[in-house]
Amino acid sequence: MKRLLKFLTLFIILLFMGGYFWVSPKIPIITGYAAKNVCSCHFAADRPLENIEKYDLSFFPINKAKIHIDESQKFVEASILGMGTQKAQYKAGLGCILIQGDDDYNIEFPPFTRNHENGIQFKHRDSLNQVIDDKLLKEAIDSAFIDEFETRTLLGIYKGAIIFEKYGDGLDEDTPQLGWSMTKSFTNALIGILVNQGKLRIEDNALFDTWLEDDRKDITINDLLQMNSGLAWEEEYGHVSDITKLLYLSEDIVDLAKNKELEYPIGTHWYYASGTSNLICGILRKTLGNTEDYLSFPKRSLFDPLGMNTAFMETDESGNFIGSSFGFASARDWGRFGMLYLNDGKVDSTRILPEGWVEYSTTPVNNKTPQYGAQIWLNHDQCRFKDLPSSMYSFNGFQGQCVAVFPEQDLVLVRLGHNSDFDFNRIFSMIIEALPNE
Image 1 (spheres, rainbow, N blue to C red):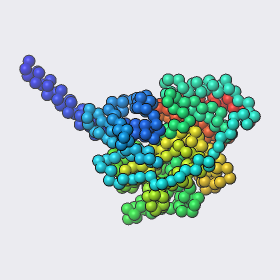
Image 2: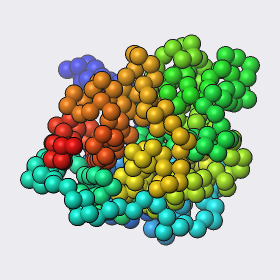
Image 3: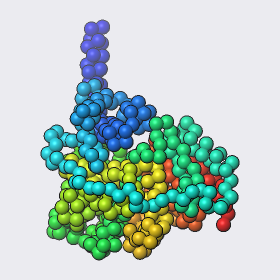
Image 4: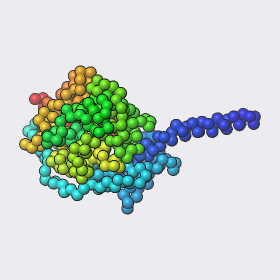
C-alpha cells in the first residue's frame, strides 16, 4: 500500500511538473493579451473593467488573468496565480504599449493638433429618396445580435448615409474599438499615401540593410503587401509562435520579423503572415526618417483628412506601429475608412491614395489565391461568401471584425464583435436584399 501511495504521489508530481512546463511559456502571452486589451479599452476607449471583461476577456484562458489597474499612473498589470506578470502603459495619442521590464525607449506621441472640421461627412438618410425595406433590414440587424454571434456593433452606410447602427451595452458611436487584423488595411493605406507622394514604389527592393547580402534583397514592397515574400513565419495563436512573440513578448517587432530567413522562393508561396505587415511599418519608419514624423504620420496623413477623430495605432516599446493588429477606431470611423476605398481613394475631390491603388489592392495575388489582394480580403468568384457579390472586398480581424465594401451597391458594412462564427453570408445578404434593386 505504501509503495502504491509513493507511486501515485510521484505520478501526480510528475504530471503537475509536466503541465507546468507545458503551460508556463504561454502564461506571458495570456497575461500580455489581458494587460494590453484592458489598458487600451479602459484608458483609450474609456470603458469600465466590467464591460471589458464581458466583451473582450470572456473566453478561456484569458478570463483567468488577474487584472490590476493603476488609475493614477495609467497602467495595467495582469498575472495568473502571481506568475507571468505583464504591464501595459497608456500613452496619450498612442494608446497602450506593452513594456518588457523597464521602459527602455520612452516613446511619446509628438505634439499634434487635430482638425475636427475635415473629413467624410455622412448624409442624412432622408436625403437619399430611396425605398429601403425596413422590415427586412430590422430582421437582419436583430439576427446579427443573437447571443451566439456576440456582436458588439453593426453599422450600415449606403450612398454616403448611415441607414442603421446598433451598439452593445456600454458602447456608442464614439467608442474606439479594436480592429485586430483590420489594422492591416491601415498599413496598406499608409504605403499608398507614400506612393502617392512619390516617396515609395511597390517595386522597391533592398528594403533592409541586413537583407543586402542574400536573396532577401529581391523582396519588394509588393511581395510584402501581398503576403508573398517567401519569408519563414508561423502565424499560430495557440502557443508560443512567431506571431504571439511579436505581439506580446517583443520590444522591437520589426527586428524580430526582418531576421526571418527565406523558406520559399520569392513570389511563389502565399502565406498569411502578420510579420510582413510589420516589416511594412519598418519601411514606413525608415522612409519618413525620424520618430516624430513617423508617429504622427497616420493621424496627419490618413485619419485627420478622413475625419477619423477616434482612430489611433498602437506601437511596440521601441515605437514601431504594430500595423498587423493594434488599430482602433469607432464604428463610424471604420466606416469612413471603408468609404475611402469605396470612393477610389478620395475624400471629396482630394486624392489620398494614388489613382489605381484600390484596384491594385483588390486584385488577387495570383490565380491560386482569389481570396487575397494587398493586405485586403477578397470575394473573387464568390470564393468566401457564395451569396455576396464577387466585387465585395473586406478588412477582417480576429473574432469577426469586418469592414465590408460593396462597390456595386455603394455600400459599406461594419461588424464588430467577439465571435468569429458570425454569419456574414446570410446577414449581409439580407441587408443587400433590403436595399433598392438598381
